[in-house]
Image 1 (cartoon, one colour):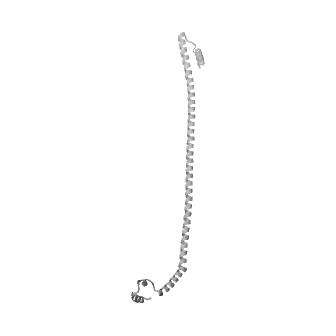
Image 2 (image 1 turned 180 degrees about the vertical axis):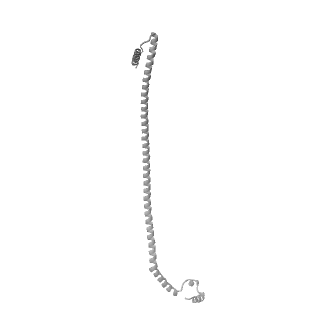
Image 3 (image 1 turned 90 degrees about the vertical axis):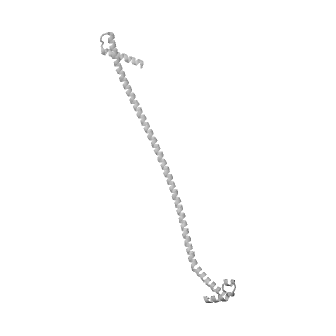
Length: 183
């Protein structure tokens, strides 16, 4: 229908009720249904397969992305476990190093203490031998001085000169005998 015929029909249908205005004319309905069926068939034949193909590709892409995300998640979990095992291994190694250092330090301390004790024992031995030597030297000097003093006293008591070497030997023998009795 043309615009002019529509305006004429609207002017002549002024008497028509409101329901008739809403309902289309049955003569227009059949071509509209045929046109709708043709458009529907064309859409079903050409557009729907393209749409389904696009949706299938999109679903496959989403599925592939989900699978890739799952693989990445599994790989990340594996990397995390590897990282944790490396950390645990490093911790164990650090503990072993600390333990070895502690043992080495303890061994070094024991070695130092043993050397110090050996040195102290050596010093004590040297001091003891030096002391014994000094004691013997002092004892010899004292014997000589005692013998000399004894002879001096004896000369003064006797009033005459005595044979010094014979008397010295006699006094030293006497002192040795006294030392043997006391010791």
